[in-house]
Image (tube, rainbow, N blue to C red):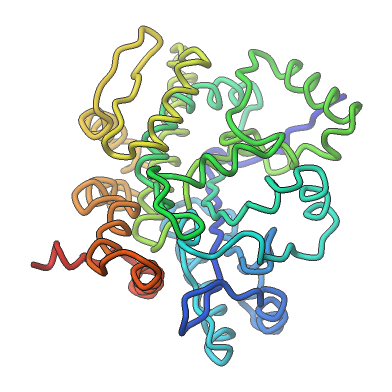
Length: 386
């Protein structure tokens, strides 16, 4: 088959943010997404709000923008529209990779054929997907650049995964992972790490085989952590856990935006982009999901290793001139703030510890996540205040 890649402006950016609908009193999930979508239908901001896989979830999206701050502004408009609709329902919004204590067996899937197909095919694995993520699209002006950029982004995947890690709890338990969402989502048949194709024709052959054997009905059902998005003309980075606030989301989006533009420029200059063997990429993903900021990651195809937070400053220094060009220098600098304050998974565990563990502690975790979404930035834990 021929897989067309749409025309797109270089380094245009678009964002998607999946958010949980929670009860304003108990913190448990509320399955009211259809009512929320209906309530915002007549609002001029409705185009920023979309339904998602589960009825406890809404997604806010941006228009195609030139800068990360512009895209964040769209998300904020979508959130404001949702809050206007959910206030009378005693419902609030929560951002994280998982809900800390809601049970998957009690959740209902949105009434849409493609979602029903996921559950029918994946069964219990499909029904367990109480997970929330952030997706960032960056425009690529030349199809020949797409696969080299996708393959090279896999080297940087653990940085994004560590910084966004926000799912230590699942089903009422501390999983021991910084990002349990990663482990849950990759179980879907076409999710997880992408294949490192060397030519567009190889990707076309893969898609043709998947269509022929009935694995997928269209390419959007290939849910890789990083993938081409041919219908948009973008590379889409999907590895990030859902964030609890726009400050951290902007930092992650800026990092993605700058990485893609940096790699695109390297290709323009005739440079070979860094890559690493699939087994190193796989190990890095697991280390980042398990250990978060304590992960010792593999840096290159030679197998050199370093603590992720020690390696990160060099990457940020490299990207700072790119951020200036793209208008997201302040947002990229927010990455340092995430490391300084601790990632969301660390703050969540600290809140739970402060509240003594048990169900009440996880309700406090949800309350802290809701408060951060309203504040638009991370909030200090009790330990940080003292």
